[in-house]
Length: 210
Image 1 (tube, rainbow, N blue to C red):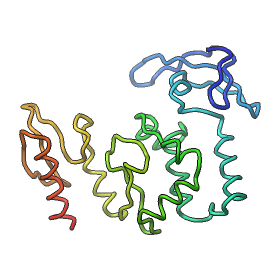
Image 2: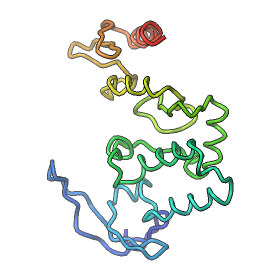
Image 3: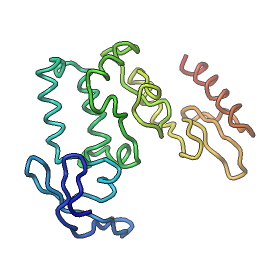
């Protein structure tokens, strides 16, 4: 990988492997130099998948451009946008492991242009008392997978994460291949068919959440 460019990184040489503390697994790292002259060891996988494109100077540039281009950086919607980018691309962020660490990304349309995210937000029900939510918790941040919900509903949703095998919140697969539907801690039922399970979940959301 020496000499290759990934975003603003130029790979200089191979670095010592990163060893996962819990598993002891070795992960390849490379010594990289950013266009702004900063040098850092970066995981090979993060370079290849585009999770790391600079030392952080890109985010600072976006912030400066935000002030000069549209003047919306003081608005709450920009804080929502910044938080979304940070969760997906900043490995030092505490919640990174739940987002970028799981492969969650922000679509190029939004990642490269805050104004497009802002325009989508304003056209799709954004209010200062709402928070952004991914419809499919295993999907990316993009127009077709995001909506705005109250904070209280998001807190409920945190207790309803899918196991990843189904892709729908509140639905898991049991050992006997049944689709188990829950909402909060309430068991709605078991279903042989995923479509019926999804319908039951939606009906439960209407019943318990209005």
